[in-house]
Length: 483
Ligand code: ZN
Image 1 (tube, rainbow, N blue to C red):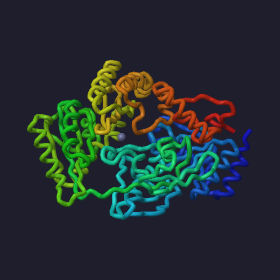
Image 2: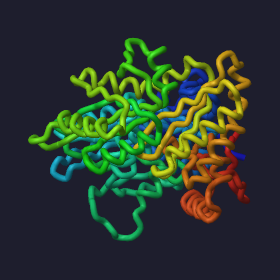
Image 3: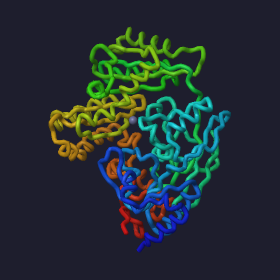
Image 4: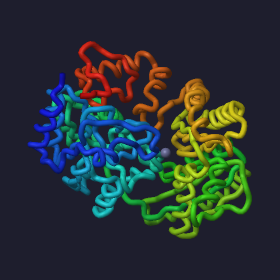
């Protein structure tokens, strides 16, 4: 039997009373996600000031056999940071910028820095930290790394994983692994950082990172393009990729229903094109070369595509303000879906070559399963990653619609699986897709994942019950620890 009061006393003595929260009102913001679909529970939320205090907390919890759930900005979508008992370790006070090295093109930050602050610190050094996502004003870099966040800059710069040179991690027994080397080449043994990146806090707690910086683009151009179909979008993408290479920094996609609801609900949104089309793409080209003009470059490419009948229509942003307006049409899509009632969401990826087939098959199958259903597919087309969201039929009861999440998972994920795709592209697994991972993952891969988990967290105290489908081992601490 665990002595929870003794653990809380021990943590309070080290961290201070103000940083061990136990009142229900103080805990509430840490116990649900922004989507609000489910609630967790916890013994306490602790707010350590630095790595040493994180390590102390984890060691104390390990000795008491109490679960530890790390939390950053709590902006996740899959319940990865949702506690099911135990102690929430908030990284919100680990906000130091430890070092900036423009020559090495790297920056060393603590896990609690808000993503937009990391971007600002890079900018102050005359560089770019390219990770960019809708929640960048409140998500924290430790959460971005532990979920291997994607976002809108993956096409050019890669996922969060690709932006990391080194990590500092608190392990399940409270030891600290200092892997904060800013090296671009290091084959001295296994590359341990990749174990923790994307592991959603189940293998260790990331407390600091050395991140890669990139040169800042000197000019960028953004266009909104109307196309006949997803197939046409793929054709345009290929042409732009082949011609622009690394200068193609975004290729985002949305179906007509997506643009329709943005224009309906987003204050100030204006139609970017005169007519209506079967599909839409937002295209961005950037260049770091002073002798190149991104606008001229993109205009010439689009004119050629138009001449070859690849596209229906295109509007090239004529100012930075208009470029921001175009991006806003895309980025407000998640938000405006709420105004259309319940939404069943899928975050999937397939090989680019199969993306039009996925969109066609999944759309037809979902529409056939529930007449009146409105498919709101959008996302990072150039990465093969689509947010395949389903808005409820008009007039249907919201709860009755959301109760169909499971059957729609089966329809959409079966198609993803058949096309060699992934059921968790950029939002992670958390609680929401844990059983789906068990259903679709290669059994050998699952076995390896369990082996890693057992080796790095033998008592199962790090974010228990997340990512891996539950298989209770003898002596294991069960998720949902209760006193
Ligand atoms: Zn996304």
